[in-house]
Image (cartoon, rainbow, N blue to C red; front, side, top):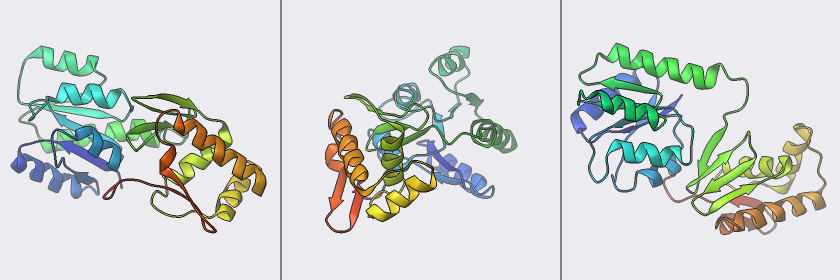
Length: 229
């Protein structure tokens, strides 16, 4: 099930889009606070974002710019305005498509399916980006980046980080981590695991994320995330 973030302040339209997309087995969620869109985006980690242009606090262009600074997640704009420059600006900011209101739902669904298929199904590589604690974790580049900078990780370090992040707020035992590394032909011993985890923490420290990989004595490690993430 693909997760779609719908940034739309018209509650009637939001509910209608959510209900229609749910029929296609998409998980749709909205924004609780329109001044904290990036925080909610980072916590949810959607596979696609749909943004209205006219929004409270900041417009859709602002949030598209902010998302693009951290993620390559597909973005579709919605707009009731018919000015050609809206579409031009959307594309220049990195949006993948633009849908004019009012629209036929079959058209919106077709666009969503095409973008998701192009972005995920036709790509045999793992999904490139994931957000954690407001940072973009890039599996392909072996980096994690936020407003404080970018940290480059080795293959083993990235595997450890992503394995923990994908199981955020859950304790992962050392034995489970070692077994997973071996299963992926990345061979580490118990001592080497400790060294790698310490290196991950050191690199996370450089961008202010060190405290969020916790050691649970006698049990393993845990990547923490805010409640509700």
